[in-house]
Image 1 (cartoon, rainbow, N blue to C red):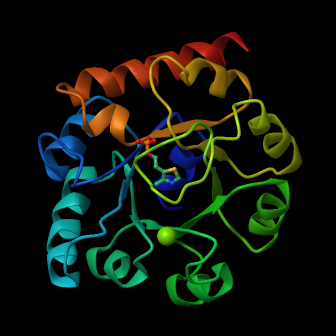
Image 2: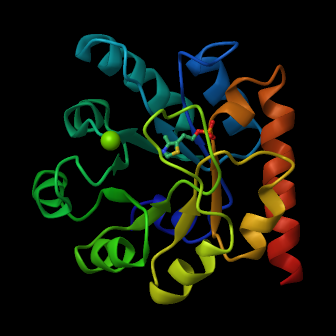
Amino acid sequence: MPFWKSLLNDIDFYLVTDSGLSRKGTLSDIKCAVAAGCKIVQYREKDKTTKEMIEEAILIRKICGDNAIFLVNDRIDVALAAGADGVHIGQDDMPIDAARKILGENKIIGLTVHDTDEAIEAERKGADYVGFSPIFDTTTKKDAGMGVGPERVQAVKTIIDIPIVAIGGINKDNCVSVVENGADGLVAISAIVCSDDVKRETKYFIETIRKIKQNS
Ligand code: TZP
Ligand code: MG
């Protein structure tokens, strides 16, 4: 059984990288987040060449080791070249069934969904988890659309069996409501990579999520 099976079923905090926003650099962000206990890292890079991405992804693979699941955004080629655990794709990226053909059964495929219909379809097509987006308004992804609000997580959570992580504008002030509405995990970019202490902020999210789940 791949090491990530149990981690995926016990998601709490999930880091997505952004080299454009990062204060200390993507590799530093990942090292600090994993040291703080982050168990899923998604390498999301829009500005580098394929060669640069593969070189960086190989380093990320080493940092994550068996402690954190390592996913690559969009780029199945980069994921395979670097030995990542899988990919995260969007509605307009390669369809899940095509991605599955390339990656095989032992890799993770996560899909971004915006409503219950897309979530049902994602599960039916074999996604391993869904990223429900965007919960709140965000400036990190310019075309993300308007935040739908944390209450909408409940509708998606109750309709599918695969894990649901929530993304978009999540920060320390609003994260509690998202978990209380049923998110298995929270994803953040700016709340982590723009901070001056990635380890501290990551710990805060993990502990907050765990506390809410214990009490529910
Ligand atoms: N997909 C949907 S919203 C988003 C992505 C990649 C950006 C999330 O970034 P932040 O800074 O946590 O709002
Ligand atoms: Mg994409």
